[in-house]
Image (cartoon, rainbow, N blue to C red; front, side):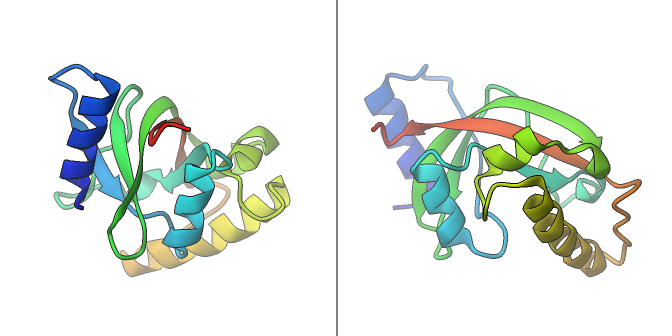
Length: 151
């Protein structure tokens, strides 16, 4: 089942407004299956992305509060629908331990978050011909909750 159909099923079962729209469907990071499971089990309730890479015609828009997304596994199968609760753009160096914990990865510490995200962003920036600087680069931090499937 593809993301759009999955969202329409959720919309019907949850009695969401008819005009509710799916904003995006995406995989998380380098291990989409593992991260999608963390979201599905309500362990991962936040994410972050590189603000500086939201440029150009082919990029997704910056996340907004109140929107619906479908989280996909590594085969692009829908796992769950989320609703975004909070979005803020901050310097990478200002991400705090609360956000790191909400991302739900590894030991949930800020040290772990810093290491894996620095490595990830360096690779992503390099693909775009840019240089990631943890002292000056900004990130979009986002909090969300799973609305479908219901537990």
